[in-house]
Amino acid sequence: MIDEGDRLARAGHYVLGLMDDEERERAERDLERDGVFREAVLRLAERMHVLDAGPAPDSRWRAISERIAEMPQMHGVAPAVALTAAQQIAGQAAIRRVGLHSIPGWRAALMAACLIAAFALGYVAGASSASGTPESAERAGP
Image 1 (cartoon, helix red, strand yellow):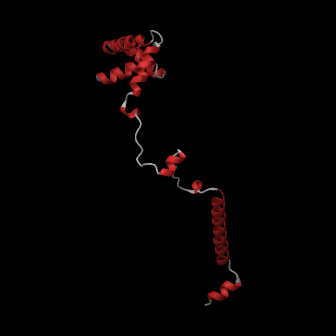
Image 2 (cartoon, rainbow, N blue to C red; image 1 turned 90 degrees about the vertical axis):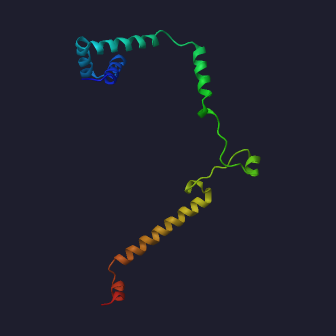
Image 3 (cartoon, one colour; image 1 turned 45 degrees about the horizontal axis):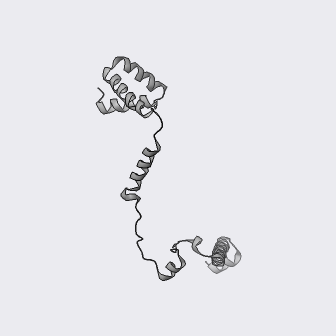
């Protein structure tokens, strides 16, 4: 037995055309057999037909926009931290960044070069200790 909520959801999917072919064919068979489902489809179709009457007037869209603008989440929020005098003079709040993208120009290049040098040094040290050179074998001893 299908409960009322499932029946209304299924009727809504049928009216809005959200069903695939198999579901639609099953719903059309149920329209012939199930009077309650048929009534739900007819009620929803009548309600949806009102929405197709024509385009909404501009005054209605203006009223909707005004109501959205009045919502509390649409109002501005005061900043959590007060601006310093230097930031107020500059007219912009400084954005605090984290990571390499926050380092300006030559400092970023210098840091990248140092990282490359450190990785290269580590690679060379690892490669020389891994190779079985006679010098390393003599140092290790018996």
